[in-house]
Image (cartoon, rainbow, N blue to C red; front, side, top):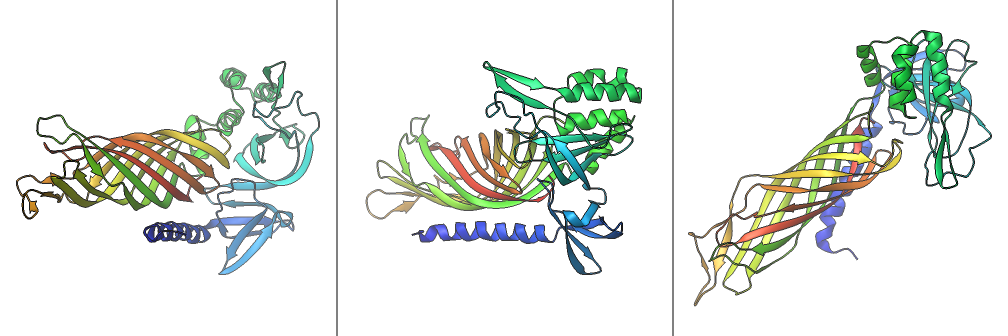
Length: 413
């Protein structure tokens, strides 16, 4: 049975989650579809972020909503955004994870007809397929013979991790054909099997300038991600003293308060898998405690705008499901700086001493942010520490804060 004080938190998380879902459902952008009959229709495409290659597409034209599955389409795309093209492909299945790799390379290819993401288009075109186990990339170009898999397989034999990097030899041959071998040889030999590295190489095969490559990369999806969420902030306190008249021991209640969140992350799509996250929101801090000698009590509740800066590292470049963690610095900006109430208990009635106020000030926390990212959803936990949150000669109060939160992605990849 949920306690009454937890109900506002539950309702907050549900409300923000529903708000995110509603906004996502209305995320239509100008685009086009090409049907198997060869008809090209312009209208609006619902941007689903497509962590996996899409099976269906929602298309709106003249107020009428249509749903197309991949059997009905040859291609579709969003203007200045994601583009997809249907193709029959052959590729090696299996994992790229050393932990779950087998003793031998996968020896047989799988056939499928899919809507491939267009990553680079030109004389040489690069396409991406996201399977449950791994990303797979394909190349088309002069005399390639259709959609050729850029083959990369892994195995663990005799305790050693081994890689079949056939894709590098294939790309070196294409670099000779394109007349850019000297420019891209080192990039190919040092390349990893990632969208970022392969895009850069294939764009060079098409002799794109650095500025053109940057613009084409941005067109595949915004590097900015916006999200909304909510959760609960739990803060515990510990007193300390450094002056002769300071209380060195006191008992404080744990503060449990709901919180709202809004954030923007800058994703490094062409480098290591990390985000730089800037987030704000709203929460409260409740400070209620009594000195162990029974002579003083403190009571205050303060509204805060938490401002958080985090650098998050991801466990995998695969965008669908992955763990993340990283350092996070929080600065809680007080909405006003009201005095708390300090009451002294001596002989007779309690006295609120105006000459010994307790101030609750802006607070800085250092900590870590971690969690699990799946599709547009994120479950997060934050742990931070702050010292001397009440700057008073009577009490030095340190805080340990834990936040558990749900975040829904509204925009970006």
